[in-house]
Length: 281
Image (tube, rainbow, N blue to C red; front, side):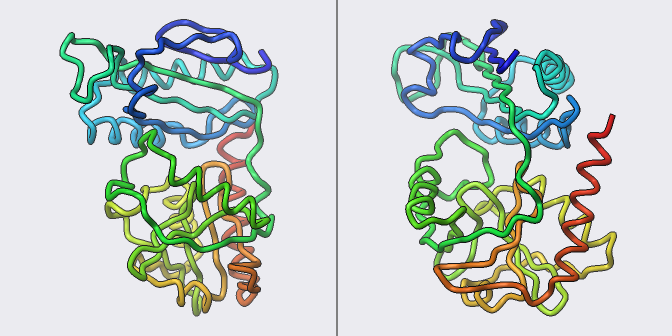
């Protein structure tokens, strides 16, 4: 398969799939999602992503109509059907199907499960990126991985128009995260990352960067920090399922980073090595 889609038990190439107009995602974005990557047909950190997916669903009262093990088996089965082992593995659950109504359906309908598998590699870990800053105007439940992504879409388009790769959001002076990544800084040998409260998504790649720091003996601080701290940082990193730890070279058209290259490379080497190790044949 060049790509593969799934909707409530039906499989097919994505272009051939049909979704009911009354799926609540069409009216409200009423659902949650998660995603990761495969290499050599092995899905990286799948259990952690599935755990977060179910946590997001629990926050919103969405009941997933299959167990975690069943979902993992389905994702692995679909990945094995692809022509390549390097894929973007995406899944979402929406709160059922029904005529448009803001309140939850009362007919007992279960969540709809969507899956898409498309060929894609993770970003080169050693690629340098360019960033811009933007006021964070999203809602106050960013710890839930919902389908309501319009602010991230607008921010990502703004970054593209500026010739940049990502946006760093800040709220009342505090850095939160990026449009589709977590953001971290290194200062005086310490890895600093925002706390996992309701203003950021608890990133899986973020967790693995912290794990790498502890393995390498790099001190970690999970605390609030400001945009001024980012400009003053020795290094700025962004992380997501598809970008394990990219360093920034530019922020708002100003040169940044480059002050702790050895520490940065050691950290990137560690997360890259983990990815290779966990997805080797």
